[in-house]
Length: 113
Image (tube, rainbow, N blue to C red; front, side, top):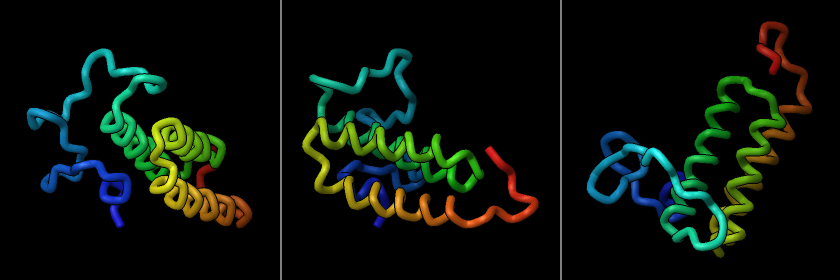
């Protein structure tokens, strides 16, 4: 199941990017802070972005600590906004896989870091 579908974020079918009101995929110059008072749609979008960033970092061989931070931050935002039920399973799967990969010895030519 795609991340956007699982957390209820609309996606632009052509690009796979999160759809924004007015059809723009631009990020505003001063994005909202995520905490009290942020609407649910913005929280869903931030969760989507954090999960996607963590997934991309995993593919790029970035350190497990940075990847874990992305996943845990996504879960924290989900908890704050009452979205934990949908997001926790996604994060738990990723963290389990991250632990499994971290416990395996990296191939000799794999980048560290």
